[in-house]
Image (tube, rainbow, N blue to C red; front, side):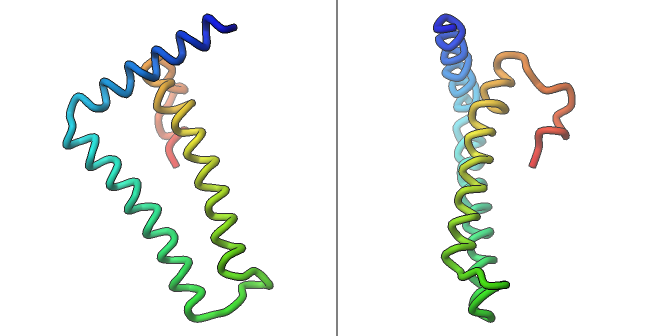
Length: 99
């Protein structure tokens, strides 16, 4: 099992090198993800500027749930999609793994 974990680490490391080969594309990708997260939080903020509670949920409770969901998606994306592609695992169809 340790051998496969080391091999998976090497695949992820190589995949990061491949993604960073085109630096501007990599930076634009990182910036677009940050912009997407900012837009999601901004949208929640706009909604809660007009109301104080949403069926008993406050702004900070909704923000907490948003953060938990975003963390789960990020972990899934990092370990199963990004590194999986360098290992040759594309899950059959790309559209099934996209959010």
